[in-house]
Image (cartoon, rainbow, N blue to C red):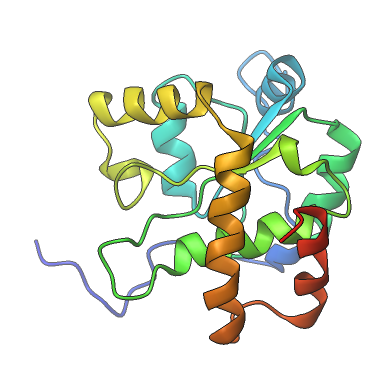
Length: 186
């Protein structure tokens, strides 16, 4: 049937700024499987929505936290500091098919937001190969995972510095975040 465009895709009850979901979700054995996956892999993948998280989980990737939008909350940053991951991947939606790639821009802005707390070489912008993880098939996931394995810090630094110039001109990056560019040498 036809999808009602006025109906919300996800219903959020409560203030999402305090959520670090699904970090404390238990499996059938009573274990915190997401937290355990993050501690085991020493890696966190941050996505926009529950749909993205479910698409990754369907492929056995559980070290995922949901931002519930385009901003990593203070609560999530505090939890990330506590978890001490060696890699943080910001994997917001890839809106490259649209005139304005808000997922990429938000990922870059959140990358800057994490720089006071994490080494820039431990944070990466890794957008899905399609619009979002739910649109990706097995070949797309293999491509994304291969890109993750071959991560090139210097190429990412250049990419972010180049995009930040246009994002600052468009008013996308606030003054506070702009000062974090010094960590990249932009």
